[in-house]
Amino acid sequence: MRIDRVKCKFDFINKQLRISGDLKGLSITNELAFHTAIDHFNYDRQAAFYMDVAGCIDSHTIIGISKSSPHKIFKKTVNKGDYNYLRGREKYNRLGVLYKQLV
Image 1 (cartoon, helix red, strand yellow):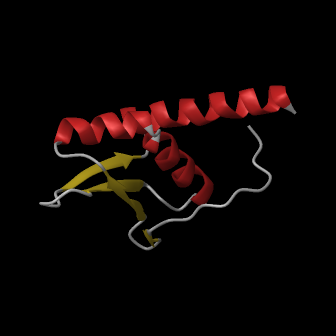
Image 2 (tube, helix red, strand yellow; image 1 turned 45 degrees about the vertical axis):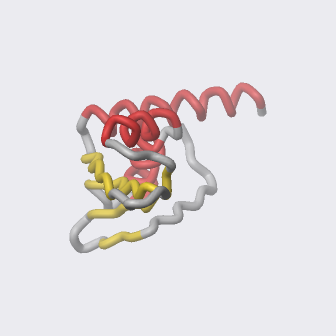
């Protein structure tokens, strides 16, 4: 897939450590709901896309913060080459094919 113009907006990135991440405010209260939200909102797709576009990132962390009190923090790290990365990459490639069919 050819990428002409895209924009990535990391919440944090450290090119020297080859890590990046995003903060997500979610209406969740437990770990299962956090992982369900990752699937529902395709955060794995975002992580894989960001790693591939940036080219200097090997690990992308998704940090979920519950909006309800007490505010709980959940964390999921996607590493280049792992299951979540490959699944996210498949999702964004599929989305690219669908977009190409529309254009």
